[in-house]
Image 1: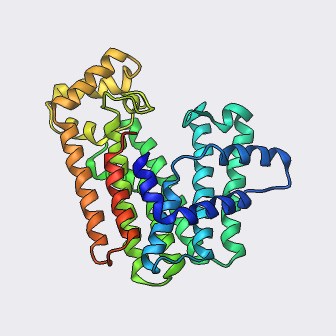
Image 2 (image 1 turned 45 degrees about the vertical axis):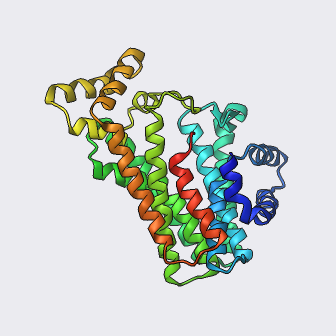
Image 3 (image 1 turned 180 degrees about the vertical axis):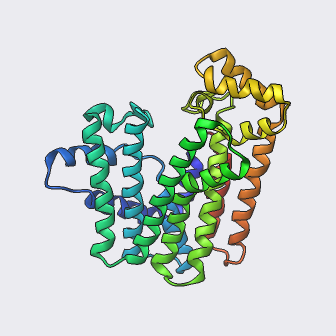
Length: 325
């Protein structure tokens, strides 16, 4: 957590003000909604997404932010929160970050409606302020995230994911939201400039590295909040597994696919699959790819002058691949 505090250091003031504005952006005349959104605000995570927005804006704008920056950060957080609330319903999750999920406390119907409400609040925040350029960035991200999730579901049924399809899935599912944060930060202060695309790419590369790191946790022995082998149990094709399947005999491949498809609840069999992936060098391969995405992201920052915001973004990229959970 110390590193997160270090990253936040140059934007502490903005993050505090953002929290107020974010809370205000959720208010409603319906008491039940206010009770639920109050619960949501009080169980926030590390807030990486708004951090990306503010650091990018300050890097490009000599340390200054404007009202559009705050709105951009609020919109991304509203829409991200809406997707998480809906995800918990879809996944039938009772917990998120060690707190009860909205659907666990208030049931599915209310959770879906709250997700819809947050989504509409995000859209209206942009429309009411004529931030149509920011709205476009967000809308593209939401479309891509939905496509990524559906593509993953479609491919999981057949377990025939190639490495290219895998990158396509994680680019849409995970990386697109971080890309949106960085391009929003750029667009808020430097609209219609090349910086918007440079930082979209920067965020996308960070997101790719972030997701591969998540995949690696599935094979780790350290306790990180989610139990080992959960991706295998959910029949998710991760990069270490794809690599192992591409580098084994026909018989081995058959055994792995059968294990993932038909024996994913068998703890012993899941452990055997994990050991198989490790033996085939799947983890080393995934680490190499993750570090390549990280380096590519850092390279994009090279052309920008040194500043505390640039240092914080570099720290953020390194944190994405070094984090323990």
